[in-house]
Picture 1 (cartoon, rainbow, N blue to C red):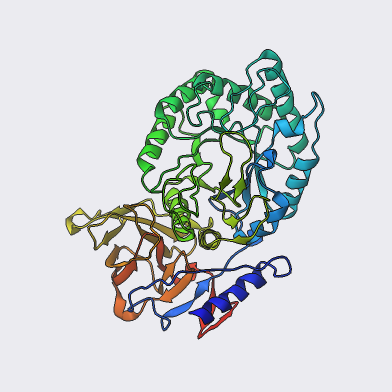
Picture 2 (tube, rainbow, N blue to C red):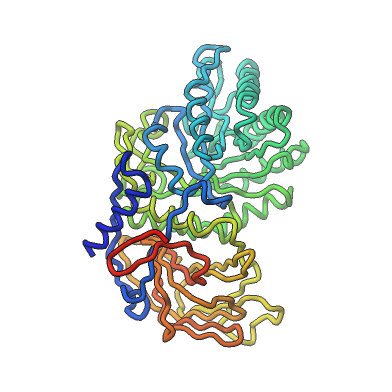
Length: 509
């Protein structure tokens, strides 16, 4: 095992440019069923794909808090492109840009946006927060109140106008305000948040009619708050100016909140069938019991990697664009949080220096490599344990041989129609161990000719031996498939770009 890890470190370091940094990949010793997950059956590892190799995908990446200097863009910028996510979430920072009334200093933001564009990245820019120069101008930190005085609102309008005018040829994707309902904030009522969203989108659309604009950005899902917000926008005829309504719902079990998400979607659809949901910020810590969102749990780098990949693929399975929070650990020094937020994919410290990628970085990279927009979800996919329940319309039907709760989503390549299935145990918080169980997985109307088994956390790919599967008349049966509380894939080999594996040597395909 030591020899293989050393080889893989060399591979990642060469891929991400050893002249800039050295990467250390630590993969747990996962003990799987000998029938499938053996070195004899291993054919390679998922090949990372940089952003210029991926045309588009479901993913966004958090690069937040640069407006408050809690992170340093230049310390991590070289890590973004190899991750394979094109769209990055930024906060514009009115308070940082207009330190003197009426004078905008764009240098810091020009540097970030111009560098991102040169790297082939697409900025998603939020217009918040407020500005201390103006009485009742709104706070400049998380959980702050929105601007509310006449002078402050006029200054806000001028800020948004100047911001969008400056970057309209570089930024197409905008967001209004971050988490108006954060924590116990009762000042930012739905009425105030809706009013700010309306005046902001009116300015954006006047300058940039084809802009993509996201509103709401709830800090936690409150159906009553969202309903009031949507109702006001709809009554004013402004709701369908927006493309997305975003939410940030942190839950210890990443699969446990989809009931609330579907309630939120149903609430939105009462007012508009056009506006979509976007998950705008979610992530898990990598160290135990440090406070903050999800802080009261014994997290590790392994459970963080499991959480992030389950969130990404759960969102994909629910047709929701999904943002990963965040690229690097954040050194909060102001506002309601004053600590190191360890939800980053990259290890940092109080000096904001990038130290190394964590296990979650590579796991997210694996997801980004496999799941681009060449795949489409199998929407006509049904679970069944009774052959009498099988639809007769050519639907894809599956059964899982276990009484435990298991997440299963299916996809097909848009051209070849070859299929891919994601499977994981979803009934508890991600653990710090890799206990597995074996299932039988049956697919009717399946389209897999050369099946492989893929572990998303390690990126390892295994040829499924003929003794473990059979196919006849579109019915495919897979036997003794090891699953655990992180995503595994059963897929046609043609849908995975990978590096060949032979003995202990790693080489590019």
